[in-house]
Structures are given as C-alpha cells and as structure tokens.
Image 1 (cartoon, one colour):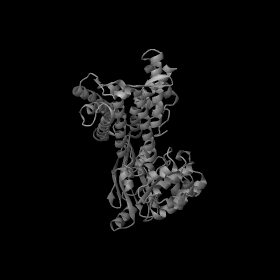
Image 2 (cartoon, one colour):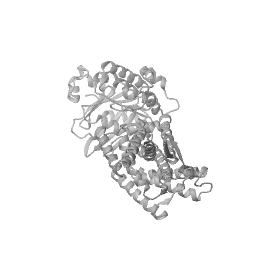
Image 3 (cartoon, each protein chain N blue to C red):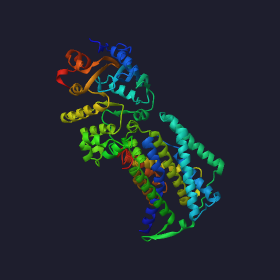
Image 4 (cartoon, one colour):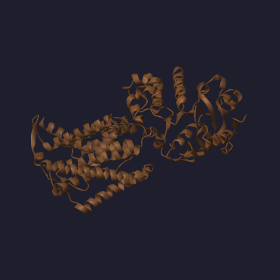
Length: 296
Length: 270
C-alpha cells in the first residue's frame, strides 16, 4: 500500500512538471497556431537563471526566502525570454507555418548550445532547500517533500490560470481566440497582444517548471528542457490544444501511467505506454480529451 | 434602363465606373451621400480570381444590398473590405471609407474605426456565455445594452447560457447584438437570415430595419422578401464582377431582370 501511495505521489509530481510545461505550450498552440519547439528553452532558462541567482544574486540563496527570490528571478528571466522570442522571431512569421517550425527548432538547438557554451555540458548540482529533502508520512508511505512542492505549485498555477482565463478581459480574449481567432479580430481586438501575453505566461510556467525540476532531479543540464518537452507535447495532444484543464488531466494520466509502468514493469516501458495512450486518445478523440477550448 | 442603374454583362471585365458610381463620386467630393467607395477591387485566393475589378458605392444611409447567385463573390467582397482575405489570397484595388483609403489596413483597426461585421454563419463563441460574447465585443466604456436587449430581449434572459447551446436564430441575434453594442459608421452583414425559421427571419429583418435607421448597412442577402423590405440600393455581382447596380425595388419589380441576374423568381420571395 505504501508503495502505491509513494508511486502515486511521485507520478503526480512528475505530472506537475509536465503540466507546467504543457499549459503554456497548449495555450500558445491553441491561440496562435504556433508549434513552439523552443518552449523547452524557456524551462532551461528558468532553471539556469534560478541556479545562477541562488549563487550570485544579492539576497537570493538556496534556502528560505532567498530560494524564493532565486526562483522568482528564474521565472522573470523565462518570461522575458519568451516574450522576446514572440516579438522578435515568431511575430514576423505568423503567416508562415513552415518557417515558424524551422525557427523554433533552430532556436531550441541554439539555446542548448548557448547554455553548454556558457555553463558547460555536464549537469550542475541544483541549490535545493534542505526542507525539500525531508520526508513526511502519508498513508503509511514516506513521501519526500519535493514531490508535494511540485504538486502544490502546479495546483496554484492551474488555479491562477483558470482564474485568469475566467475573470479577466485578456482571459476572455484568449478563450475566444482559441475558438475563432479571426472573429476576435473582427470584433476590433488586436489579437497579437494576446499572442505575446500567452507566450509570456507560457514562459513563466515553463521557467517555474525549470526551477522545480532542478529541485526534483537535484541537478540542471542544458538538455533538461528538451527531454521534458517531448512529454509535454504528448500531454498537450492528449489534453486538447488550447485547453488548460485538459492539459492538467492529461498530465496526471501520463505521469501516473509512466511512473507505475516503469516501477512494476520494465524500466522504459512507461514511456512506450505513454505513446500508446497518445495513439489510443488520437483514435478515440482526435481533438484530445477537451477538444479545442481554453478552459474545458 | 434609367440614369440610376446600369447593367454590365456578366463575364466581361467591369471597368469600374458606373453612372451611379460617377454620380456618387461627385456627390462624395462635395460631401454628398456616398460613405464607402469600392473601386476595381480584385481578390485572388489560391490562384483563383474570385473578384475581378468590382466597383460600387454604399450610401451614407439605409441599406445597400449585395446580391448574386451562390459563389459569385459576395462574401469575399465583404471580407476583402474588412481585410479578412485569407493568407493564401491577395486583394488589390481601392476601398475608401469617408474618403480615406482602408484597403490593406488591419481588420481590428477597421472595426475600431467603425466598420461593424456580422459574418455568415454567425460565428458566436460557442464555449463562452451570451454575456461573455457581448462583453468581448464592447469597444467603448458605454456599450448600448439598452438597444441590444431592446431589440433582442431573449439575449438578456439567456445571458448565462453558453452561446453554443443557443438556437440558430438566437445565435444570429447574438451576432447582431455584438456589433450593435458599439457606435458604427457602417455595418457589413453577411446573410443574416440564412438557415433561419420564417418567424425568426421576420424578427431579424425588423432588427436590421431598426439598426439601419441609425447606421448604414452593406448587406449580403439571398432572401428576396428581406431584400424587398430593406433594400435601398442594390448591387448585383455575377462571376466576380458587378453585373447591375440601381435601386433595389426597381430590380425586384422586373421579374425578367431578377431571374436573369439571380436565377430566382422575384415574385416568389426567396
């Protein structure tokens, strides 16, 4: 029983990371029709900026409020990079899908190379707050606190995103734009501002995922963003393009399936099962679990 | 044929100038009755020459109706005016609103400048509530909900209902309500009665009639009963060109002309 609880919490922790990366990716694709292969770069920028801030930024550190400040710095860095990528590289290419894909793939490769050039190719130990390494007993299982941190962070982000989409003017524009972008424009709304905003939101969530993945894995490497991005794409497709709630449900399904199959089956079989789940969902519901909608 | 109308043989290039166009241009120069002037408008989409030099004018009051058989380019004309030509297409020519060239300007800027658009098939946001659809369309601090709910009380009653669950007629009311919330210089309305029950058609026609008292309308419509009720001027498009312009009632009073241009019996209504 305790093993099942531990596997469940660990799977949900993994799901939290997938959700944080996938939610922004999903909104960007749902609203702007941009398949952003550079999204993993935002995660890496967040992770490295947090790592750098913990060691160099005055007031920041690896514990307490210092760590919060370091994570905040990482999130801001990811947000700024994402907004700049949209403004400088994606915006001129909105009517050119192939070029968009080439640019984002190129950017993801160049980003990894730049991080390797700046910080080396080897993983760097990540400054983890000591309390995240402690364990609590949950239904008889000894659960590391870092898993719970990931789950709580993802739930907070999910709540904030849903509240933003539900209660704000820009949230309304994004929900409508995911359904019919042209009609939003025909109501007199400059939807390009919403594009920049969803890139920035996606960058912030991915950067937070980067900082939290550092806590979870204990290290940060230039390729960590790319490896998480593959599963985030699967989560987006399963959940439905543009659906934050769909991404959350799909992330939980993928995280738990991967964790349990890898533990009870052969290591690596979980990844294959995730791809099989993707195939089944695509055959059963080609538009994903939630279809194309920004909230449900 | 009178001074107020001109027929152009479908299939032949339209040079763009008609008797009404020349007269309206003169009137516009002197602050006369023409609000929108479309001149030599051509649209190519995916290699197809959909519009081939369309020219007409829209009066600064009342309803100007764009007529024509299916697929001749009526909706394309409205969309080109509003800058909604698809990515694989291009529009050339001239569209002047109040004397100012607007062809090529971004759609959102044109709508903010006062071009209200009601698309074919309504295009309400199905996942949003009626209230959210209306709120999204607000362009001023003082949206005219009194007018919208006065015309369509049903929208007020169903404010919390998802637009996707409305009937076709209710969705059309919502689509019209979205543009009527704001002050407009001109409304571009594409087949508002398409697929609606006769009773709803009457309601929509009444609403259009009332809206047209306050703002000029360029209307694409196939229902001749509605055209007869609303139309001031009529512009008939055939094969991507203007085939006839003139007073709508004159077109509908001539069954032979109506049948040759529109392939329908004017006496039969729709």
